[in-house]
Length: 137
Image (tube, rainbow, N blue to C red; front, side):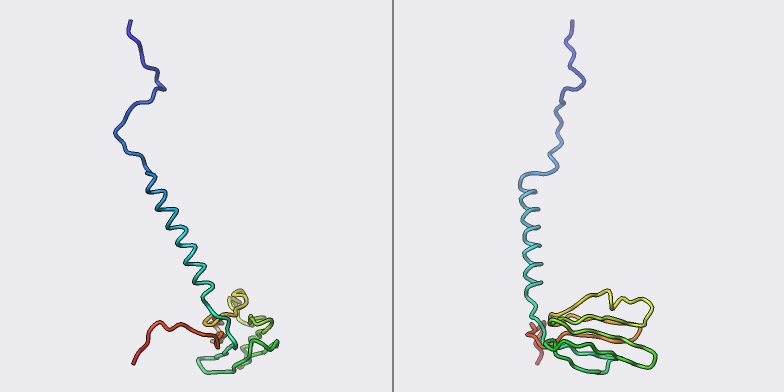
């Protein structure tokens, strides 16, 4: 009488394991490095000191972020209203159709922008220390 191997018995195969310990350590290391770089880049921006407002590429005005105020930008039938409060600027009102500029929220760091594309209004925070990407002679 022959002994039969049960169907649930594990059969040996020559297939290597999907993940080796070194693969897992590498993946964890890359994730930690990614978080560290994100944190460094987010904290590396300086708080700005003013906001430049441009309409159709022309300078409309420059406002200090230290002074709380509400400013309305009117160009014909186009109207945008932004608020400066607690060192941040945000778009309060725009009579454009999509209101993307309002949904962008508040900005306060150098180089951040809020854009109302239909009205060609750009709010850009300036006045902090900026790092240069390229130095040309």
